[in-house]
Length: 190
Image 1 (cartoon, rainbow, N blue to C red):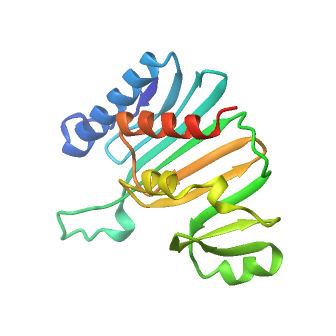
Image 2 (image 1 turned 45 degrees about the horizontal axis):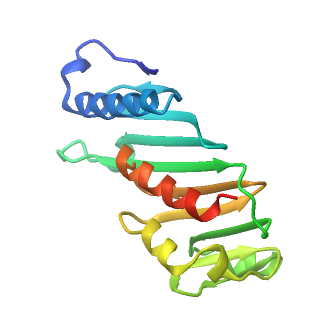
């Protein structure tokens, strides 16, 4: 279960009520999947980790939604909110042992010196890295990439040590997470 860490008087605050609603939906999702969920929820943060089995694959989902006071003005009614989701699927077999697709950043040039890094063929805002030359159309077909980044921006898609990982810059809802899992498992199940 997600632990409620509430300061007196916060249980009626709109931010806590929203986090509580999200926490409840993820706890229900965990029960439906016979999973194990842990984390914390209060007015400022919802953070959880969910583990469950899907077929012969081990799935781990980590989600976070946090109000960030560093980037919020006390005079402003709006708060900066940091959100993220990470989905890991364990025991995936692949011919390519290690690769990563990520948003381009200032470190791409440096990483090109140590491994094979190049712009992703069908989206120049992302780069693909590997220690060996890859057939990117095989590891990440255009249709799959477009589907995975349809709703929100992808931070990273990676494969290493039989673990497929995808990170988003948003907290996904349970329905979208299940859809994404089905697509990933269809492509990478063996």
